[in-house]
Each structure stands twice: as C-alpha cells, then as structure tokens.
Length: 335
Image 1 (cartoon, rainbow, N blue to C red):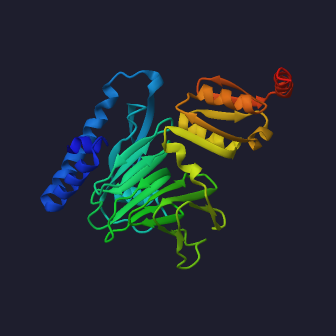
Image 2: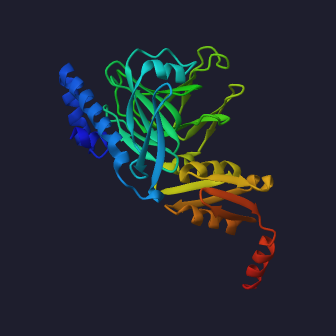
C-alpha cells in the first residue's frame, strides 16, 4: 500500500489508513521514510529501460553542487521524488524563511507533462508542467509546509492544528482545509493565487516590497495577482477559468496569444517564436480536450490571421496575409 501511495494510485481510504498507521508511533514514521528512500532509489533505475523517444523527457535533478543525475522517464510518469539536504535548498531559496535542518523531497513535473501526488496528510496536489514542489521528510509532524517553483493546484486535507502553507519566492499562502491554485514560475512578472473553496491567508515573503504584517484574506472565486517588481497586489473576482489546466478539458478565455504561447511551451515542451510581435496581442477563447499541439495550432490559425510551421520542437508563428480573404470567401458561400 505504501508503494501505491508513493506513486499516487491509492484511494482516499488507503491514505487515511496510512496516515493513522504513521501516527501510531515514531517507528512507523521512520519505516515510512526508509521505504520512501528505497522507492526513490528504484526510480533511479528507470533510465535503463528503453523508451520511445516521442514519450520521454530528460530530467536533471541536482543532488549536490556540480552533481547531476539524468533520467529518462515516460511522459505519463512524470512524478519523481528525491531527497535534498536543507543546505542545498537554503542556497536555492535565498530570501525565504530559515529552513530547518532536515531532509527534503522534490517532486518534478517536467516540461511536456503534468503530475499528481498525495501527501501523507491526505492533501492532493496537481503540478503543472515545468514545476517543482519541495516538502520535508517530517511533513505533517511539526508543520505542513511546501515550497513551490511553478504552478500547482491544491486540495488541502482538513487539520485545524496544523495549517497548510505554500511558500513561493514572493508569497506565502496559508490554509486549513480548502482548494486553491498558485502560479509562481521563476522569471514571470507576476505570481497568482486563485481560491476555489474555503479561505486562505496570503502574505508577502519578500521583505523589500512587502507591507508590514499585511495579511490578505481571499474568498472563493477570487484571484490575487502580485507584481514582482513593485510588490503591488490586485484582487479580482470570478476567474475560475484559470484552474482548468489540470483538467481533461483545458479552457482559455480572452487570453493574449503571447501568454498562451508560454503555456503551450510548457505543456508540449516546445519553443514558440513570433515572426511578427503584433500577433502576440491577439486574444482567444476556446476549449481543448487532449488535443495534440498541431491541432491546437490549427485551431488558432482558423480563428485569427496566424499561420504556423512546426519543425521538431520549434514552432514559428507568422502573419497570414490571406486570412481575411479566405474568411470573406467562406462567408459569401452562405449568402
């Protein structure tokens, strides 16, 4: 059951039984850690398996300075956990709160894939492509703290005595039992938190831009957006469309092609180049259901004067000068 739990295939009842077993004694908790380390070690052997090139991704997991483990894994099995020493994490998270001296796990969703995990407390987490999640080996004992680079959707298990905390480079999101989405990709200009159910408290962790002791309480169907450069935070309502990335049906609504292209790059592990920058300002609405990249691009080309070429993992978008003529001819057929 533990190994099914590590790979994310247990039921809610199984998770409850495992949690109760771990809480029975410190020895059970130690056994859980031992089995987890063994499970991780077995995962490192996956690069010996011959996999189809079209369904694999290279992952680089840094276990110590200048040491890299390269793995080949199936796109549908993108979740990998590796123990990290706190000293390395402290270096990675300069400016974060002080990290206790403990071992940490990292869960990775590489470019071109998503992953789902269940933590020992029963919390379910969906990781978007290109995301990293860190949590301590003693998670659930003294705290329920995770650290995020990227985007994740959380369904938090109820525990009033141990609030669940998501820490990013600029924000900390605190919840007891709720559902919410956090997007904090390195290099992007903003960080977003969207609340689906319950309540969350949001505070800034960047002491330079943060207002002293400011706590923002979000209510369902609200989105908080923080601008990294100046620390400004804006709250908007009714923006639940932005959590559909984790579902089978992925919806976009009035989104500029520039930001949508960034999401496509992560989702399909490609590089998108604009030959005409004005194309990045076109806005789109649509729903996609497991369509391959070429079908998504074709749908865009039918809705706007955009044409594409796909070579390997590079997509080039250019202006379709005959777009208006083609649409006018199609319209006249129905007159």
